[in-house]
Image 1 (tube, rainbow, N blue to C red):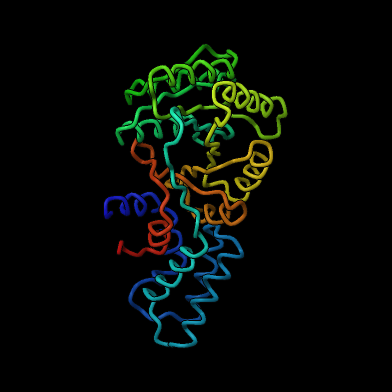
Image 2: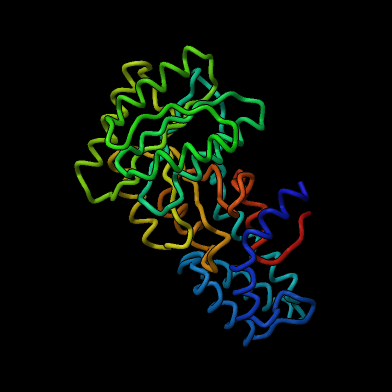
Length: 306
């Protein structure tokens, strides 16, 4: 538990540091005052928590402050974390293996970290003692297939791939057949890093789905959007378009270690109510971690694990 919390705390360092810098260490042992509450409000907006969440956090801390003028920063931090946990209720994706193979389609625009995240997810399944095959269906971008091959070779994960420009749906079909024949638990399909405004690429995504359903009418059982956590409101708009076109079942929020805007995750969930399965907290293969609302909330407010 502690080591997992440490991953969250280390991965969210930039967000935590940005909040601490603006509030001048408000969450230490000293009493809060009107100035520190104003600074906290600014810090939460800067960290991209949005109007609703910031308003709720401030309202509860102010209510506690009216009840107790001796309220200390550490107590205020605990209140803020409690509000975040409440806002994120239901946000934790619970992953269960169903059909063999259970298919996860990874969706997202170029630059979101989708291909790298695909490899990291396969590596996690492998380390958990489950069998997995990756399908390199991002044939639209020449470097994507090679990038995924490099990762899977390094991590010892099986891959089904073709050449750049190949029919991505045909690769998905072959990968499902291979996963079924070899008795694999999971098939992870890395789709093209498409611009969500390009209709032909959205149709390609739909074609992959149709082809998979020729093998298994329930496939793909999971359709996850990989979003760059530093993009804030833009991530929400991306997700809305993909959700309308493809019916998303989950989210992976990446690059939280590289941004001071780690609050964007909350806005994405508030808007869409799609569960968050994993978050990216670093560059290493094991830096993809299952999302924990408790760990996230406590880390953001500089609290220790309970």
